[in-house]
Amino acid sequence: MVVIGDGAFQQVASELALVCTMGLTPVIVIIDNGGYTVERAIRGEHARYNDVPAWDYVAFSRALGLGNSVASLAHVTTPEDLERAVRTLSDDTRAHVVVVQTHPLDVSGTLAQMSTVLRAKAGLASLSDTLVSTTNA
Image (cartoon, rainbow, N blue to C red):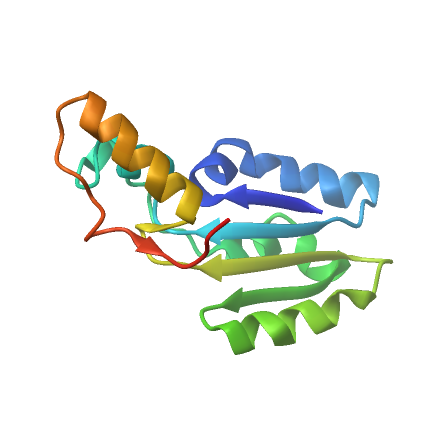
C-alpha cells in the first residue's frame, strides 16, 4: 500500500506507467488536499507556493494505462465513500487507486500541536482556529 499526498504524487506520477509495465498490483491512496498541508500549517497557509494544480487523478491513472489493469479507481469525499472504496480492495490481482479528498487545512492533532509550537517560535500567529483537526493522532 502506498499513501501519498497530492503534491508528492505530482512529482512522481509518471511512475504509474511502471505499475502497468511491471504488472504490479499496489493499493495507491492519494490524499488530495490541494497542496502541501504540512507547509501550510507551519508557515504559509495562504502562500500560493503551497498549492498544487488540481488534477483528475482517476482520469490520469486511466491515461497512463491503469484503467485496464486496475481493479478500482475511486474518488472519495465522505467517510461512507471511503468505506465503500475500502471494500473493493480485496482483489489483490490488480491495482487500486483511491483518491481521498480532504480540506486544505485538515491536519492531525499532532501536526496541529507542532504547528502551534513552530509558529510561536517564528513569531507567527497560531492557526488553531483555522486548522481542521479531525484526529488526535
